[in-house]
Length: 428
Image 1 (cartoon, rainbow, N blue to C red):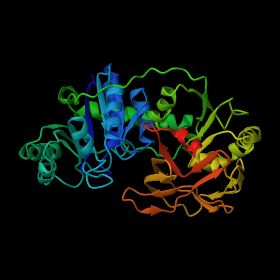
Image 2 (image 1 turned 90 degrees about the vertical axis):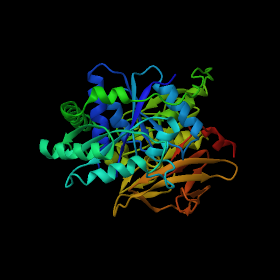
Image 3 (image 1 turned 135 degrees about the vertical axis):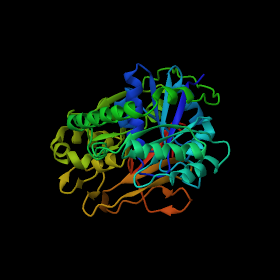
Image 4 (image 1 turned 45 degrees about the horizontal axis):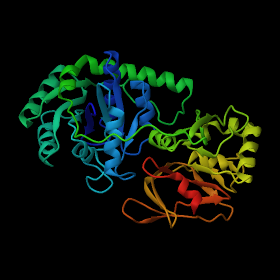
């Protein structure tokens, strides 16, 4: 049976969900509580922060990229045996890819978990009452179990906010004081020792703030038991096959459920570093995930033996999937730094603009769901044509291509195959 849990939601983006979630996770672990972190939606950076705070892998729960049943099974499997699960929500509480679909509120309804609503109290006081009241009553069947205020300037400010909370009919669980030091470190740092040290300091500061003024005992008491969900068989029969997965400071945007899917199919996972290793492991499939290759382009460019190993692997017909940063690594270059040269692409970070959104990737006989998030762009594709059609969450076509060379596929889109089979690509 899945354990207790709660969802940290907010009235809008920018309220401090990540700060509060990380602080709560660390504060609970300091007490010896086993915390299972989750992230509502497709974000693969916040999950890395969760792992630092709670000491275990964070799992994405996303009903666009997978089925509701898969989400329920993931929650049940990973929360089983833990004292409490903390799910960081996405954007505002009711913001989804289509109205409420995919939102924190939608996930609360799906799993039967209570919501802790985080409210940004900067530059407001009693006016939060109608806001809280509206969030409480907007959609029946979603339980807002308590409110935590962020960016509170003083005790008298909190006293006014607490009265507003009481008049709105929702329990007040405490507050986080206004503190300029509680600014989330840059998400664009890679997993360097410096970045990890900076994140550790931030997480501890956030935990100190939560411990000082949030009723953690009461918050733990009201974490609800979710609706029951069947836990799938986690065992697998070894197939003797190996998936080589790039994993280092430059490549680390990975959905844990994707790796678990490989394991359930009987694959052994061999991690390797394009930054430091001289060659690929012997493998039946190579996976190059996204990350920050642009921050390490000189080191990647200098590792000629690894680049040659990748070229030889693809040249000999090896199966490979590369996404976003992994695709850039397969390219001819990024901003003058030579990459593997498997694909005739030239990439750049110049005039960087964000491209993001859910994607359905249709190969004709098979389709995958995924998410696109990048600032770089391809300025020369060498005439390479897309082998798939991509559409957004509303079914509108987008121009993002999927490239193929021999048995190597690459795209800016991060695919999710936790409840699918990536190997279908090579059956086309």
